Length: 158
Image (cartoon, rainbow, N blue to C red):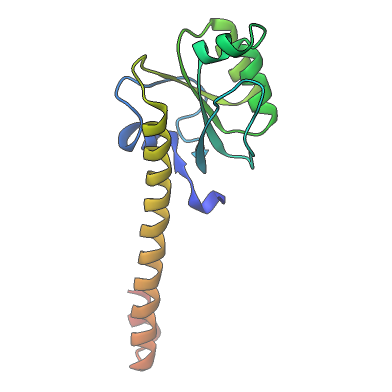
């Protein structure tokens, strides 16, 4: 996904993320290009930059005892994710690491369903992209019609 196909965290809080999700670190205007769920602390999916990674603290601890949330935040930040959404208790150290590395950190409610969140975020991104494409086509048609009617420049700009 490109920057053009992105939605801000603020918009995702309104449209896609569960109620009671909070931003613990980062800018609400951070652009998110896609959502991915991290299912194991050892294997990261392909990351292109700009994604929101969704993870659970208890999953990290059950897979690898050394995989602290702070270490995973650091690893994901270096992989160029734009935001990390975490379910579970997050320490001040983890929040500080996210702030230091410039990655947004969202705290999800304990009952958050990963698959539903990933699907809702990606749907919001795709719907926005489709709406923008539809609007661009609409404007192009109007300009083409006005140009075909030999309208003056002022008519084209309205």
